[in-house]
View: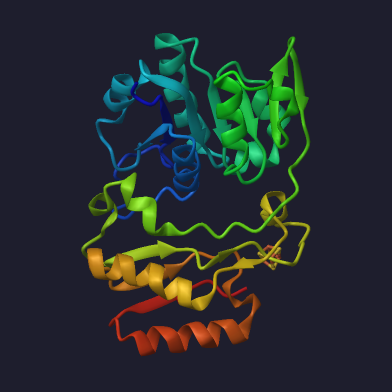
Length: 274
Ligand code: SF4
């Protein structure tokens, strides 16, 4: 029996398609795809930024889908996500739509009020999505799942944030789900990469602590193995570290810098310093 599919949609970030000539990998949905594959489901990642035919792709997979996931930052990505969700509702009103990403994390109850939202995930979704999938496969009700908001008898229930844990996903499987060539800008040959997640500070104006307040750095050896995989396979020449706070541990940054030089990959790198 073929496995059931789960569409994972990364909506447009901007109103004008093609206004940017470079796109980072859809980092918010790729770890979710890996989690779902552990349940023998078939994740289908649809990145609206790089797939002009994305609506046709979604329609093509919808018939065999257990549920749909949509990831959105606050802003235009919600508008585009709702546009896609309405198409899905029109074609398959029985397929649950699960929203995740920054907006759902910060405002889970408000997100769950929309008629195009069945479940809003708050925080990192690698574990929550497996519980949600099991629920829709008939294992248990949504009410026992931590870290989600959903409508229950016309009232929105929020089950509370999950306890944060360290997430250091290995990115080497990501190219099973996306066509990496669509993300390569020949002018920059840059790859976006997280060598770790989180930040141990809790600045009041910063959104990071909604996702996790644990600093989860990958071991430098692992970082170099993951980067070597993409540099060797796809020819990237520049690394854009997108860590929440790469310079939190300056000794680790020095170790990382030396490892990059010693690896002799002929790459440059860039990161924000806070
Ligand atoms: S990432 Fe920067 S702004 Fe956010 S909590 Fe850490 S130090 Fe503060």
